[in-house]
Length: 165
Image (tube, rainbow, N blue to C red; front, side, top):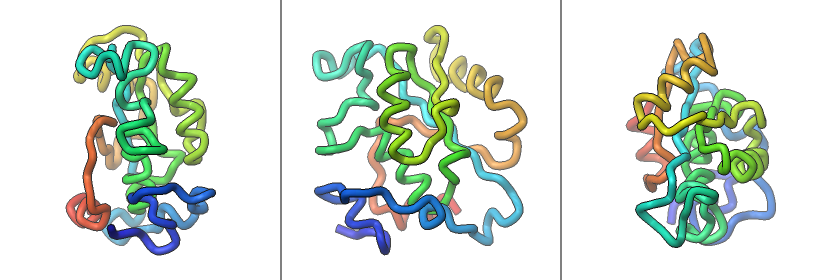
């Protein structure tokens, strides 16, 4: 298992007692110098494909169990922030109305502001969700915008970062 320095094996088995300090998670990278990088993470769904593990009130990306003590959403957001790609304040999560409280709880522990958890008013598929999210974040995402589904697993983090930046 590979880990980021100071991360206490964030990608491996157990989670450390704390999260890396915000300033350590998003160093400035020459590839994005002077430009803001934003991320929109889609973490909704009605829970039909993994039922009964996930359901409308607990979509698959928010379920803690696939990865042990963290959700796929937490893993996805940590991938962006710990790799130094996106500052926590620039991460937006789009989820269902019933998923908002759990998403806010999980993302709060990672330094994501509660106002960056966006409720999708009605399911309109990925393109509709993107259109809605862009309308909510406005001009913020016009420099560099990364889009990700929250239900994927990408390792090692170093390869992800190298491919992205």
